[in-house]
Length: 463
Image (cartoon, rainbow, N blue to C red; front, side, top):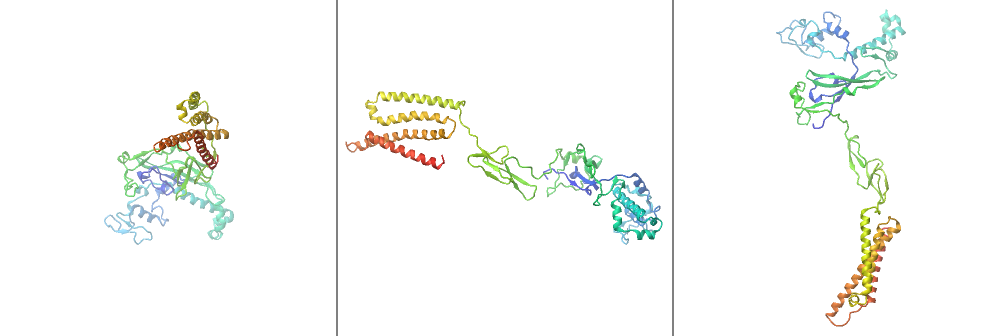
């Protein structure tokens, strides 16, 4: 077993302390108990000889010492006694019970559980005494009256009203008949002397929980030996020595008693078979967690998840270039340089407009190209404005139309030159539609197609 865990049990677990290393550090909740030296001394003094009125003492003696009161119960008989007795144990008698003087010969180790039995007996004794004292005092001297006077339903009321100081502390009952008792919280620890249950604290109906967490030792040894099922091999685990501890894994962190940890912000729960077990799925960047945290929901295009809660979509804060950005300054300087160059070229173009070279290069189309280059550099500043409706429309249409107005004349000029040279190879006749007016008309048609396509796309996009 790779994962670390700590056993937690009830009062039955606290009865034993020989589980060994795999259960070291176990926690148990048991009924509150206490020692009574008076009872232990009395019990140790009991013998079949001084309790002739007890019908159980001789049988108990045979069970404790594996002996027999019969004459053939000597060391050499080797017979099995108890088969014909009215109790369920078979006893192989090797010695006579007369060899054992008192209970201490068995090295009996008392547990504090007997205190619960003592308090139970005393509860009935106090209730009976109060019952006869109130309902029929004559019963203390007349046994016939004692039997006839006792009523079970009435006695139950006296039993519930009983209160006294018992071995384990004050004994009383609530209005439902439950004992107002308490519980002890214990921890099993292993050391060189063996294994012991250490008291950590307790709980009762009056004081509530009282545990000193500093007394809890979270150091747990994990046996490296595993069986085929992945569980620790606990064969002969009560025979733990220091060599096992030296080869055991040690961990002192407080274990977490959870199947699944809570999901983080922006994660949805995916339930597993057990109610307390789930997996977490991270929602995508544009998704929020649903109201019941079991699914991811996509935000609309203009909204974005609230990063503090991931429970709602909020409006996206616009981010745009400002004049304090370095990139804006670079673009502005380059645009100014482009504008200056465009103006200089335009001035030179106008000055030499009657030269053969200018005329041969389609003077009208070249002028159109220069003008649109100038406006293309102007449109750069439209992108540097705060993104509002007018600024966005202007930058969108202005830059696109400028580029279209530059490439449409170039396409018309290229087509004109190609047609002239192609026609010259066949004949000396001048091709049709090569006049400046025809070229301008073709350019305007191309620009109109581009503007129409741009407007249709903008309407489709909702701009």
